Length: 287
Image (cartoon, rainbow, N blue to C red; front, side):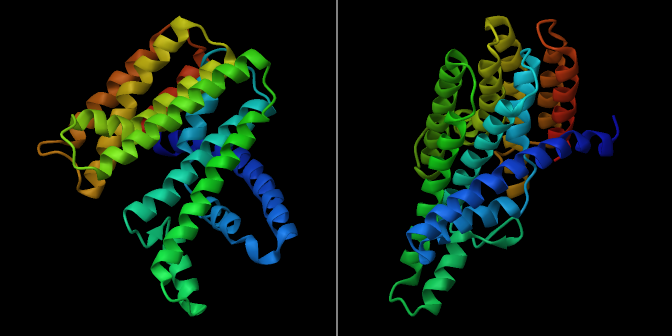
């Protein structure tokens, strides 16, 4: 599959997810403005980050995990996928606070922008204010993700199974964030898994499968696909940031991607969806 064709697998996801988020966040902004027009700034920070771009890899994994498990296309799964992107938005807002980053997706981070705004207002401690507003925006993004997910409209048993999966993703995301800043003697592979792999590929794919009512065989097949791909994603991210362990290489990441793709031959997976997940794996390998 060509690079252009591989990249095109994300285009429908970006279009559908962004439309849902734009409408949902516009309503949340109206609610904030109804309280007082000056209170909408944290919601606007979420809107600004969503509009700044992003690959929407996590919603794509959610949607295609659902389809791989036999789920039929419908508004419910797109809403759930959009909720996963909002969870990611929370992580980015908080990461920029923890890492003191001034830029995100080519734009000023919420932290940096709110520090500047506090300076313009003449506040005594603008850095504290900017950090606090970015944290509030991240907390709101997490709350919005839960609201959007809980109202997706799946049958109660599947909604409950998906909620448990989403809770697991949030737990692992938080644990990974903690381990990334605490200087503890923890296996680097565990830290890498929790930091990115768990909620970038495996968590979303298994969340989608749970919403489709996928059984143990489907879950096992999708985990065999997702675990090495998540590791490859985090390794490539660490290599790009200069944080990779000594001796780590793109060749190692490529081998993980190939292991991931090999798992997709499992007959329990829907073939069309498996082919699309294969394209997603190829895309991750090119990052």
